[in-house]
Amino acid sequence: MVFLEVVELAKRFAGVVANSDISFQIEKGEIVGLIGPNGAGKTTLFNCIVGFHKPDQGIVRFKGKDITGFKPFQTNREGIGRTFQIVRISGDLTVVENVMVGAFCRTSDRQTAKEMASEVLHLVELEKEAEARLTELPVAAQKRVGLAMALATRPELLMLDEVAAGLNPKETEKMVAVLKKIYEAKDLTLFITEHVMEVVMPISQRIIVLDGGQKIAEGEPKDIANNEQVIKAYLGEKYAEGRKDRGSV
Amino acid sequence: MSALKDALSFGDLPISERIGFLIFIISCLAFPWVTKGSFAQSVMIQFLIFCLYGLGWNLIGGYGGQVALGQAKNVGMSAYTVALMMVWWDVPFWVSTPLGVIVATIESFILGYFLFRLKGHYFAIATICVSLVWQQLFINWDLIGGARGVELPLRETPNFLYMQFDSPIYYHYFAFLLVLGAILFMNWFRKSRLGYQLRAISAGEDIAESLGINIHWVKVKAYCITGVFAGMGGAFYAVYYNYIDPFSVMHLELSIMIALMTMIGGAGSMWGPIIGAMILIPLDRYLGTWLGGSGVVGVDFMIYASMVMIIAAYEPRGIWGIIEKARIRGSGYGFLGSG
Image 1: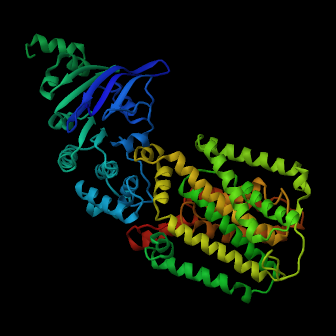
Image 2 (image 1 turned 180 degrees about the vertical axis):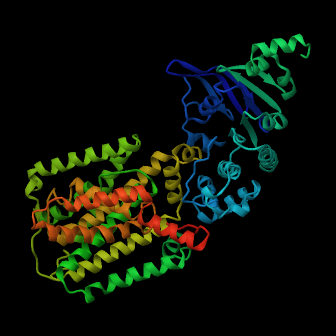
């Protein structure tokens, strides 16, 4: 049984094609990266899988079950967790309380939720900040709170939307370390969309590339880095031409 | 059992809040013995009723961040149920009140189920529209008294079965018990799963939904609880005034007053509605009396409006927000779990 399967998915917004004919599969335990230039349709694809958008065409299957058109809270209950580019959480609540909100979808008992939240905070190395307000934390820590909230819902598939956007190189490095740690500790499957290549390239086992709403390549990171179509999509036709002339492909 | 423990435990609040709560209880208990003026006593009882409304509205409007402006219709439906059952069939207060609360809750459920498909301003406007429709319906419905309202039959006092008393002391303590119950409920609520989920929804619906929260259902649940509070307040209102009409209990002004009062006090905090009622209700009643005869109409509304504007500009979280800010600045560290 395929863990996550997307078949010929398409999504249009009033005539603008955001995703068209995208198919791929993810096996349990994999780390898959999703890259592409701005506007390639990465976030739309995420939203279609999680349920924020209803795809116009195509099927999304998770663990063999058709989840196309499910609401986000339903896909979450099926076992898909998701983080956001911008962490917008209640400033009234402390960090640990925000994470408890995630845990509350698996338990109704406050004490159990608190224990689950503390465990997850330990994993993302935020146990010291547990009692702080979110607004008191730097962006890097806020991003890890967002990660902890999604993790607290005990997902099997964790979809990370631009976890490293806006972070400096040092913070990015830390984020990658944390991601590796949770991957090992939690028996997770990770699906990462990212601009920052320093995040995707070293940890992904496989990479899917989108451009103009279509899948243009799929493969191991080192192959993707040398894929002509990918280079074209990222750096433009001319750069790819020049590269060929210099004989570096 | 743990729910009861949560409701009764105020241990996680800072000591200043616990002392404040104690002062509130003591002054409410002592009030009828200290003040003999009947006007002051009636203002006090109105304050308590509004505390009840406000504590309920705070759930959906404060914690949930959904500006619902239709509490008056729930108050009215419950008040009418109680009053009409007494007039028509002589049903005692203790039997008709649960029914009135159920009517108010069912109305909240049905309305919430459909209206929560709307978001933000659209939701607020829809609740206003529905309230106006209900009010017109009650004004023109002759069977239930129409615009003349319903007068409750007088009975021999004191009558605990029908809640009729000569002395306002009985009403005072009964209203106080209701408010105390409401505060204990809110104390449980703010620590409960529903409380956390509602606050997450008001912070951001997308994130809340991706955390497995069925936001529509959670909002409907919270709206129903708000309806229960309004229903209890309405039932009490009917027996306290012995007279209700569609202008006193169904009016949009009442809904707006409840929302305003909670916002001024501090929406989304435990004590906000009480602080708001403490300021607005006496102000409203005394101003109304002083200015009522002088021909100056509308000054009270100008005063509320300026208060709202000042608060919206200075501290959107209301008076409670100002208090909390001062406290955090004073201690140099944020408090956990207040509000």
